[in-house]
Length: 193
Image 1 (cartoon, rainbow, N blue to C red):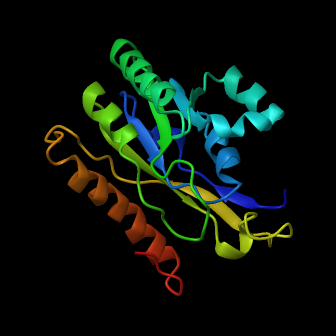
Image 2 (image 1 turned 180 degrees about the vertical axis):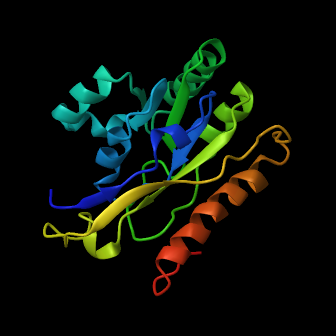
Image 3 (image 1 turned 180 degrees about the horizontal axis):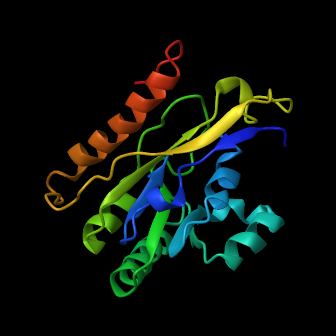
């Protein structure tokens, strides 16, 4: 596709079970994430993507778990219950976007709570993965995105040992602030809040 990319070494990723979460505002995200080659990790993908047949085939081949959209609350609740049970009874890590399905823009969207409840119940630490796609290289804005360097950064692991449902919103906001801080460092002229 004409982009250069950078990734952390696989040796830098945790060997223990975690919940990876990432920002998601570019079409290139899915290619960057699957190119990581993370072992023992299942990705969460929206059912909204079922229309992209090649992606569905490859996603099913790597054990992706499809989450129902918010307009299907019963199936969505079943997804969280079943996936939490899967995490409690296996050693697999999970990778899911904190922003979920949203209108893409150059910034960090608000974070959903569902995946964090899942991490809390499964007692998983959070590992932020920051995806960097410069605005001029983002294919969401133009069919003719400029070539550039896109990539992934592995940020510091966040313990959930002291988390509970009473302070969950505060902790989710703290995790979002990690992403906002990194976004603003890399985009000093187009800061997000």
